Image (cartoon, rainbow, N blue to C red):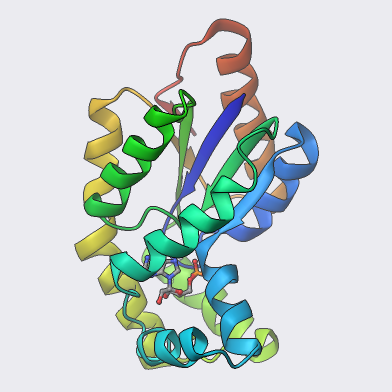
Amino acid sequence: MLNIIIFGPPGSGKGTQSAKIVENYNLIHISTGDLMREEIANDTALGREVKKYIDKGMLVPDEIIMRELYEKASKHLDAPGLIFDGFPRTIVQAEMLDQMLEEHDMPIDVVLSVDVNEEELFKRLMGRGEDSGRSDDKTDIIWRRIEVYKEQTMPLIDFYKKQGKIVSINGMSPVDQVFGKIIKAVDTYLETREIIPAIE
Ligand code: AMP
């Protein structure tokens, strides 16, 4: 089994790269953002609840995210592997994920941290807002999401560094070049079980 976390600020290209990784390594894609947007699109009670947070650029409470995550992940425990995209976003979520995976003897193998500077993130998200139709791709909300990332999610870099699982990927290049770096990181891991700490 190959379990990957793809990690990075909003606009770093996590979703785009996840789709390519899924295809290349035949993994199941688990995006908590997509799960939330599906609930909103179906206008469920949960969708209406989480929309309040998402539209403000805030994180959805851990209990809700974990419940949805368990439900989705438990259907795919026999898959060749999982890629978690936009999850975990807090230390609590990361600890609960470790616990869940440990119980099933299927630890996280590699954590890909895609690095993009703030100016570029903002440019990309503003551009995306014009055609994504996402209610949270608006100027003030974009800044809030980047702040929330720095405050609540960045501490996870140290969490996974301590576990020796982080690969920092320079995400400032075109999509295919970033994907090439990801392939290098994951293939090296598969061949040698070694983590390359950073790829420029
Ligand atoms: P994303 O598509 O990953 O950028 O997620 C969009 C929004 O959904 C985020 O800004 C959060 O409000 C919410 N969300 C997605 N994943 C999580 C998570 N793991 N924890 C808390 N909130 C989340």
